[in-house]
Image (cartoon, rainbow, N blue to C red; front, side):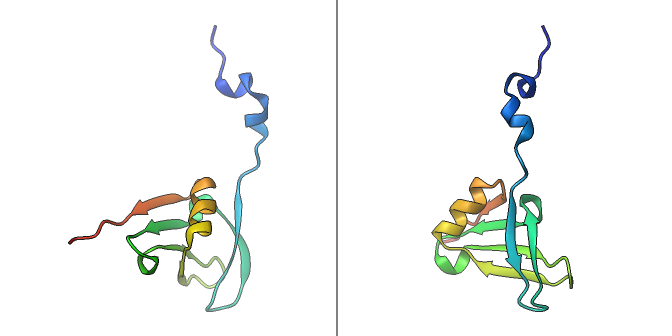
Length: 88
């Protein structure tokens, strides 16, 4: 019997994609981004933990600090995460 997991769990096939509200500090545009449009970097300190994206309006590369709650929301929403290691 060849059934997919999606057909066995009907709720999974109806899950809406996660969207994150964001704003560009350069052009001040406000928009929603999918998890694939964001990147999260987790460093050893608050200074080295941030998320980034490209503004869909003006094309600016945006980098913003990510506190614990932001990290939790982004990782839970499927944002790709890079763990930065210190070189001590």
